Length: 290
Image 1 (tube, rainbow, N blue to C red):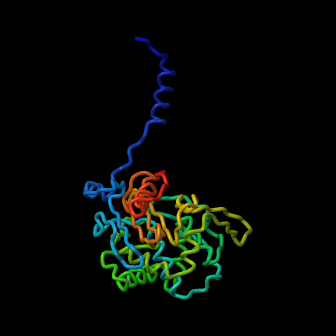
Image 2 (image 1 turned 45 degrees about the vertical axis):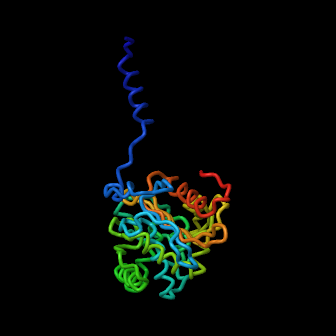
Image 3 (image 1 turned 60 degrees about the vertical axis):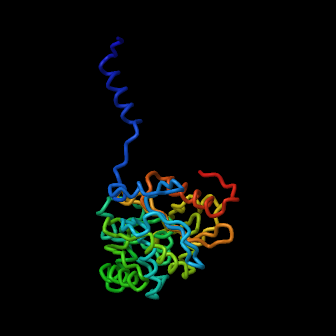
């Protein structure tokens, strides 16, 4: 047997560890066994719902009543209550230390002391899933974050979202939870707002702080950036407990669909699931699965 020098053996060991795949911890849905449900489409997502947005006919469902963390899908409701409050979209809002993520310690390029218009914060929250933008929207709501969250929960009840609970405005909290059935209701309501449809489907955007710093952001949904989907509204989400999440309203063939996908493993999994759903709804499609 060949014996390597101690320093070389250590270097090879470190290199091996650096390139060895790290298994992702099981999501709450997987811990509950939701991924083992009967699923003819073999979706990666543990929860799925596909419905016709016009007739409300359910075309496909997998664990649609399961209540799970929804991550940044939360931001849709944050923006809904902000717009329904008829707040000044041009008002400048300062990012503060209160907007720093203490749940997951996620990174943000928006720094305390920088100012952006409420319109820009909405844009970044929807398109780029910017957590400090969503936090600032909740904090600047009349009455502060507590009032914003109370209104988010009130609106969800009014919309018939009986399995939904919001704890804060970003989705970083594991206690922001909902079901696919409830989220389909939220998507149907959110699509009534032109600004939500526009901002959530912009491939990229540029904003400038009051001090002149320019920020470039791109959409977190690669299906939007690819440009071969007809998407009217979308929102992505991710925290470890929730897995990869996606909600969309999109036209497939002649049908306007609401698609909800929760609890997928892997950054591309939810988008591959969306492609499978597109083939299922419109079998003549020759779009390949990415």
